[in-house]
Image (tube, rainbow, N blue to C red):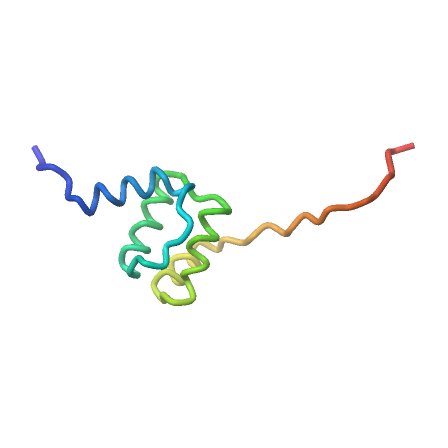
Length: 89
């Protein structure tokens, strides 16, 4: 039987669970960012908004850059609004 999880692990679990509500990750050290990114991947919570959070911090953290590049993630092209009135007539 294992002991109770550490406060650090519980905090990471809460961050993963509520990652869609997080506005910035700038206060976290690189080791925590990399671990958080791995846990988000494991939980299947990576989406465009979450990826943007990590990309904003990646220029400051080499290990995080390596983690992101190893996945070969490409951003989808932006969909521009149109004013086309064509209706198939």
